[in-house]
Amino acid sequence: MSYNLLKGKRGIIFGALDENSIAWKTAERVHEEGGTFVLTNAPIAMRMGSIKQLAEKTGSEIIPADATKVEDLENLVEKSMEILGGKIDFVLHSIGMSVNVRKGKHYTDMNYDFTTKGWDVSAVSFHKTMQVLYKKDAMNEWGSIVALSYMAAQRVFPDYNDMADNKAYLESIARSFGYFFGKDKKVRVNTISQSPTPTTAGTGVKGFDGFIAFAEKMSPLGNATALECADYTLTLFSDLTRKVTLQNLFHDGGFSNTGVSQEVMETFVKDQE
Ligand SMILES: NC(=O)c1ccc[n+]([C@@H]2O[C@H](COP(=O)([O-])OP(=O)(O)OC[C@H]3O[C@@H](n4cnc5c(N)ncnc54)[C@H](O)[C@@H]3O)[C@@H](O)[C@H]2O)c1
Image (tube, rainbow, N blue to C red; front, top):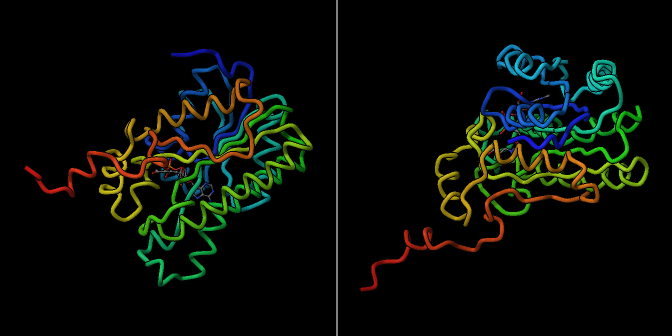
C-alpha cells in the first residue's frame, strides 16, 4: 500500500547489496512512496551485488562510495545534489561489517587491525557521512538521517563479537551528532534497532539460525522482517515524525522488553503433571 508519504523528497540510500538487504527493501518502499534517491555502496559490493537491477527498477542512479573514505563521501553528496536537483531530505546508513566475525576470531582473541577496520566501516562511517553532509550544508531543514543498529549494543549476545561495541558506538554518534544537526540545521538523527534478519550481514554472525529462532519465540509479535524495517524507516523519513530525534528505536516485535516468553519457558520446564 502506498500513502505518498515521501512525495517530493530526495535522499541517499547506503547498503543495498542484494534483494535481502534492509536497504534494498527500503529503496523499493521509498520509491513506492514517491521519494527519489541515489543508491550507493562500496565499489567492491558493486561488483558482487545486484544493485544495478534495483537502480533500474526504481529509476535511480548509483554512485559508488567507500563509506570510510571522506573523499568518496564528498563526491557522493555533491553528485547526489546535482542528480536529484537540490538538497537532501533523507539518508539511510545501512552498513555493517566485522573482519573479526568474518575471519572467525573470537571476542577474547581479537586481531586489533580487524577491530579497527570493522569499527571504521560500521560506526565511524556514520560520523563521516554526517560530517560531510553537515559541512556541505547538504540537508534540508526537517530532514531525517537513520542508521541501523542491533540490541547487542545494550545486552550481551556472545557471538555478536565486536559488532556489539560497534553498534554501541554507532548509537552514541547518532545522539552526539544529532544534537548539533538538530540545533544548527533542524535535522533529526535516529537509529533503528532491528530484529535479527536473514541478510548477508545477518547470516554472517555465528549461530544465526539459533539466534533468529530464539528471538522469534521471545518476541510477542515475532521478529520484524526487512520489509517491516523498511516501512518503519519510511515513517522516520516522513513529515509525521519531525520531533523524533537522538533516539535508538527498537523495531523488534517486543523482544527488547521481554524477560522470557511462554514458548521459551516450555523448552526448560519439565512436565509437572
Ligand atoms: N541482518 C540483521 O540481523 C541485522 C539486525 C540489526 C541490524 N542490522 C544492520 O542493518 C544494516 C544493514 O545490514 P543488512 O542486514 O541489510 O545486510 P547487508 O549485508 O545486505 O548490508 C550491509 C551493507 O554494508 C555494505 N558495506 C560494507 N562495507 C562498506 C563500506 N566500506 N562502504 C559502504 N558500504 C559498505 C555492504 O556492501 C552491504 O551492502 C547493518 O548496519 C546491520 O548491522 C542487521
